[in-house]
Amino acid sequence: MIKKILDKFGTVLYVQIWEKRIKVTDITTKKIFDEKALVAVKNENGKKSIEAVGNNATLVSNVNTSVSEPFSHERLLLSNFTLAEILLRYILNTLVKRKIFVSPKVVIHPMEKIEGGLGQIEIRAFRELAIGAGARDAKVHQGRELSILNFDYESLPSDYH
Image 1 (cartoon, rainbow, N blue to C red):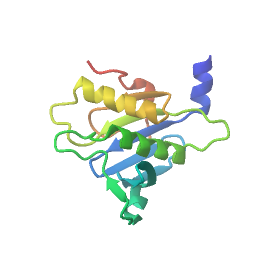
Image 2: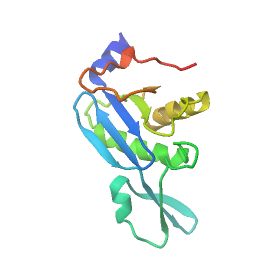
Image 3: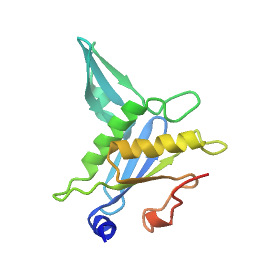
């Protein structure tokens, strides 16, 4: 019963991740966040704070601020879990603005660096990334791009073994 109520008021977000780009589509409203995968972190007197994310991170020019790409690594798509979670949380909060806030379901779809498939550790990391960013449930999709026109969260496998 509660699940049906959450599904009625909640939404599903389709998150596509590339090394230098992140695209998140709200399946219900069709709103899209499609920007560079960047996080600007200010380090002043030993205290770190987030200055900007996405395309806005390129606009920050400060000697105390560094711009990071949380999905850029030589071997893996996920290089900085903490900054990736901050970026995804920002995007979720930007796209899902409701009077009755119900956390969204999220499908994470790594778009590159997936030769040979993802390992269980990578799948778990992506799933936990979504949950930590505010998703109430998350699945990791491997394969071709999903169509947002006939998107069915429930038909996607919930786990890879």
